[in-house]
Image (tube, rainbow, N blue to C red):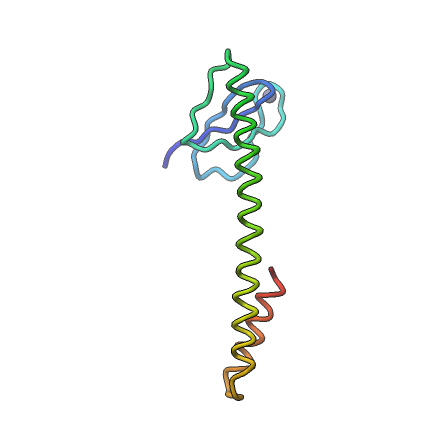
Length: 111
Ligand SMILES: [Zn+2]
């Protein structure tokens, strides 16, 4: 198990915890929730506010991209399920058809 960093952008402080840690990490200085940074991205020195600002922008952009990708993946999965349902509906009745259709429709509703 490795260590990961959580950071407070206001105080420019990093707090390290085990990568398995799942709770909120309060900033030791201001008490606000720190932002998860992970273990790959280096923490800028406290004396370099511009690097901290760049890191914050970089994380915000990465989050936007990840949200967009998740939305696209969701739409793709919807289409896959809809096509699968349409395909099964065209097949003749058989014992597993009804429950399979129910499962697929249920998954579709959960998206
Ligand atoms: Zn803080």
